[in-house]
Length: 156
Ligand SMILES: Nc1nc2c(c(=O)[nH]1)N=C([C@H](O)[C@H](O)COP(=O)(O)OP(=O)(O)OP(=O)(O)O)CN2
Ligand SMILES: [Zn+2]
Image (tube, rainbow, N blue to C red):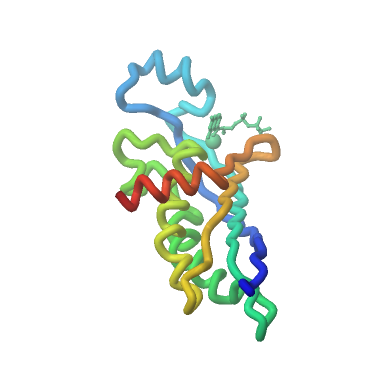
């Protein structure tokens, strides 16, 4: 019989600044589109990142994932890269890829999709939801079917 699958979520905190500005738009269009977030001086957020993985529960440990290993991965690949940085200066966001929270979620997903299967020996561990909360009111999810179709596209 196959092992029961469970979802496990873990939250992380990081702080970063950004300016929402699309190089392809005029200054006026940028102001119209992004309003106060287009201020040339930028502004900061204390982001929450929530990572949800799914996989078989190991009958010996009772765990879906080894937490210190997941923490070390997120720390090394995501938090060390973005915490206390200006996102517009990150190479990913230095061109046309605006550092909106949607695009930040896409970049974090790209990194974690690559590295999460390596956390277990069976490689059945999958990233099934990624949430970034930018403010108390704004949050962005990449989830379920959307992630699956992104994975299929990427592996073509
Ligand atoms: N679709 C998106 N819209 C907006 C994004 C985004 O990433 N995707 N980001 C922003 C800003 O970065 C902005 O700083 C958020 O500001 P605001 O909407 O004013 O924030 P809140 O009202 O939720 O919170 P306060 O801290 O009370 O200002 C804007 N839009
Ligand atoms: Zn902002």
